[in-house]
Structure formats: structure tokens, C-alpha cells
Image 1 (cartoon, one colour):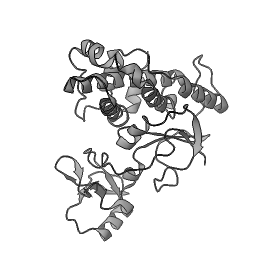
Image 2: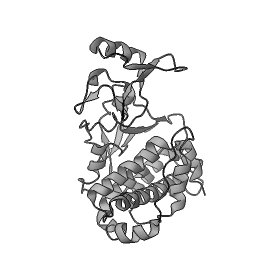
Image 3: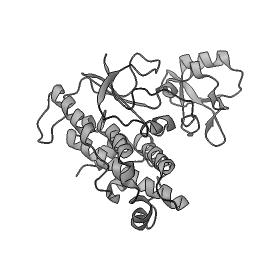
Amino acid sequence: MRFFWLNFHVDYACRHSGACCSAGWPIPVETDRAIQITQITDHPDWLVPAIGAPDDVAGTLAMRPGGHCVFHRDDRCGIYHARPSSCSHFPYVCVIDPRGVHVTLSHYCPTAAAMLFDRPRPIAIVEGPAPPTGLDLPEGLDARDALPPLASAKRLMSWHEFSAWEEHAVGTVGAHGAHGLGRFESARAAVPHSQAAWPEAPRDHQHISQRLVAPAWPSFEPVITRYLAAKAFASWAAYLDDDGTAAVVRAVETARAVLHVEAVRQCAEVNRMLDAPLLTAAIRQSDLLLVHYADTRVLSSASSP
């Protein structure tokens, strides 16, 4: 199996920031992992039984107040070598199709977000190693039995043509484009009702944008471009929407709009011009919404014209 990455992601390695360990997400524990964890810990009540879970899931990891996993202390995981597979898979976002495994990252991970700032070379798709997930095949959208996506002219592409289209897309995507609130609202609407609603755009969004975001936005074009390239590559939208590559373009436009709103939000909260720390926070929040909170199928459908 071949593995493909964006060149600015290929060197990713966990730096134990703990963001995924303190996000408050329910973390399923496979039965075999539960046995291993039991053998290496004397922590009481670390497993929360999961009612109606699949047979291979023993439950979920217990959380401390604030959404911290009970095993995450002093910036380290106490069960790292026996951690559940969902832990080892974060922040990888994968598509598996007849060409191989295509790996992008969730930039909610601070390490992944930081990589957007320190890679000046031209964007390219490169072949790289398998993500160290402990799985023979990483979790992700399995499109191995799917036909290639449609081109914009509603013509079925070949896999070679789709690869060429992706290469062009990641090399030409840009920070400039519409920042309309409509696409941000479509992303908000894709969050399931069972979760807390994503906050609305800040009041006086346009005024704050003109004062605190627009003057600095062009100076971060390389960073924003890399972030958007990660939305054009390994995009689930190509397979979940009948519009194929057009759906990928819309997904990129939605990501740009969400990032802009979250940048406005960060700047408004501290009344400061957009800078690298504020843009980093906006990038992380954008992927928290787009990758982790929004229902991918609903989001793809909501982005349709």
C-alpha cells in the first residue's frame, strides 16, 4: 500500500501537547486494549461502560474535570503504549482509494498547526511512510470500491486524471477569496443537535474584520494557503458528494470562510491585530469545527449550490 502526504505534513510526529487528551471527547477503548491497560494501571474506575457499544469496545476512558483523560498528567500519557486506537490515530485524516492511502492532518493538533508556519517550500504531494497508528490500514474513508470523482464538467475522471487535478489544486489554492458568512453558517448547521451549538460569528463581524484582520491577512498568505491545500488534498467531499471535484472546491471555500470568521473571533476577544498566535488559535478552532464537530456528510450536502 502506498501512502501520500502533503510535503509540509510528511514529517509530522507527536510532541505530546495533550490537546487531544484534554478535548473532552469520549474515547472508545477496544476490548484488547482494555486488557492491556488493566495490566499496567492501578487507577480505579478508569473505564466507563458503554451501553450498546459494538462487541469489540469495552467502554470509554474516564475523564477528570475539565475534559482531561484520567491518564493524561504532567503532559504525558500514562498508558501511551496501550492507548486506544482512536488516540493513536489522531490527528490523521485519511482517504483510502485504489491509488493508496492519502493522509492529511487535523490542525486542531497544535503540532500540526505549527507546521503550517514553518514550511516555505512550494506545496506538493509526496509519497511517505504509513502513519504510526498501530493499524495495518489507518482509519478513514474507505473508497477503494468507489469510482473516480467527477470532473467539473460532470465527466468521470480516471484515477490518473484525479491525481493530476489534486496536484494542480494544492498548488494553486490561495488565501484570497470570498469570506461570506453563508458558508460559515453551513458549517455551523452541520454540527449534530446532540452536541453543543457552535457559536455564531461575532457581532460587528465586518467592522472587526476590516480593523483587525484584513490588514494582516495578506502577510499570512503562505500559512493560509497551506491550510487550504490540506482541505483540497485527501478530501472526503470528492467521494461523499455527487459533484466530485466541484465539491472539493466548495469545501476549500467553506474552510476559508470558517477560518476568516474564527480569526475575527480571536482578534475580537483580545482587541488585537491578527498575529501568528491568534491565527494559530483560529486554525485550531476551524478544524475543531470542520473535522471534529461537523457531520462530514451533512457539511458536504450543505455546501452544495
